[in-house]
Image (tube, rainbow, N blue to C red; front, side, top):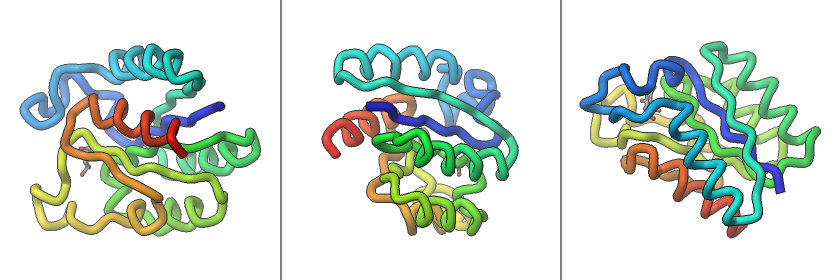
Length: 142
Ligand code: DQA
């Protein structure tokens, strides 16, 4: 009942990064919220962050090797650029749910394309930290 929660570039700066867009919660705050909700749902979460695309690819592979039930993926800007992440999502056979704090579809045009979305089974966006909680509930229901 393991769910990987993978976070991409600049999400280590949550809390201070463009708070008018991303809010004031830190990634540690979000991890705490996820751990609480996971306990209620009978799940275990492994929350990680990297600024490096290849680490995210490696962790997607690891999710399969560890038999994870699902992956919640906020790939940050790699969402909009990374064919490597799309290929990894397609390769692993573990359901991936795309997560965003903001709603990229209402922001700059370069955020409207999502490679992650082409492989993900579902997406939750625009709810701030609550996006992660709703995504975890969707993962529990898979
Ligand atoms: C984001 C949206 C992306 O467009 C942006 O590059 C991020 C954060 C979000 O959670 O709203 O880094 O993924």
